[in-house]
Length: 178
Image (cartoon, rainbow, N blue to C red; front, side):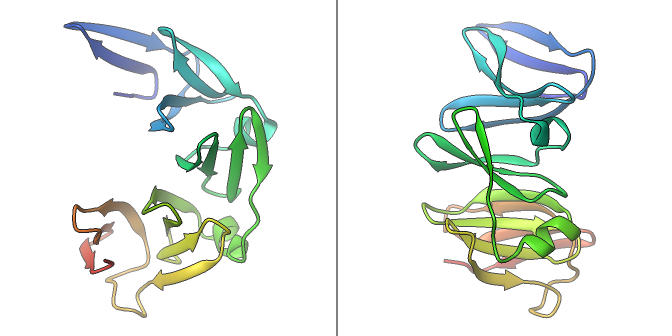
């Protein structure tokens, strides 16, 4: 569990607390690693009971991570609100250029999940939901025009039937995606 100032780990009936002098901005799991972003320090990985730097690239330090998603065995797809997408291979951060970069840079990515081995769902604050493939090519778009109540995607859930549930400003939306 994460707050802005602490990460809590419950293990063996004990709670460990990991503090920061600044802010914990992200906490997630990808490729069997627990990851956290500490503002002005970088992306960290939890290993052997402590947090160590995984990536201290200036692009990560100067942005906020929205998600770290499995891309392949040793690479993560990293999403940011205003700086678009990146691939993180080891400690090397590489800009991941797509034909949707104008939207990703201007309409703020707010949430992203991996749908399957080839597709990712990316929710924005004003361009709704974009489904892209591993090459960054737009496969589908779901927005107000396609029937959503509004274009601000706050959360995404992929259910056990491979359908999508979206949290919006004024309710939820169901997309029969399977």
